[in-house]
Structure formats: C-alpha cells, structure tokens
Length: 96
Image (tube, rainbow, N blue to C red):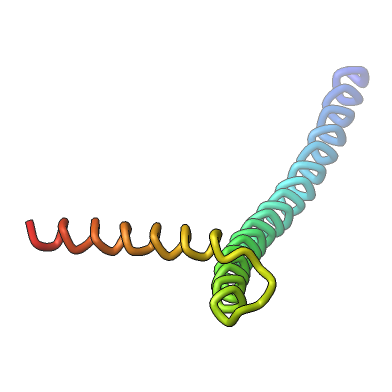
C-alpha cells in the first residue's frame, strides 16, 4: 500500500510542477503575443513613414527639376505626363 501512496504522491508532485510550468508559459506567451502585436504596429507605422518620405522625396525631385536644377527634365516631364493621365482617368471615371 505504501508504494501506491508514494506513486500517488509522486504523481501529485509532477502534476503540480506541470501546472506551475503551464501557468508560467501561458503568461510568457501572452507577453510575447503582446510584443509581437506592438512590433507589427511599429512596422506598419515605419512602412507608412517610408511611403510618406518617398512621396516627399519624389515631389522634391520634381520641384528641383522644374526649378532648373541639374536633374533630368525628361524624368520630370514623364512624371507630370503620368500624373496628367492619372487625373484624366479619374475624371473620365467620375463623369461616367
């Protein structure tokens, strides 16, 4: 009978250890999931900032070219023509 009691006691100890480890890992998982969400949010903000900065850079490049700087005027003309075509497309879609 003592072997059965020892086995039960050992099983209880093992179960307590497993439950303690489970709770610890559960809390750690929640923290890690929150960190992942925060990092994904930061990545999204950084991507948006990069897009905004790229657009500002493109506008600045066009402005410098129009201003008569040493940049390629052909590139600026092509960009302006592309913008005009895009505006024409939008107008035609609105008027339909």
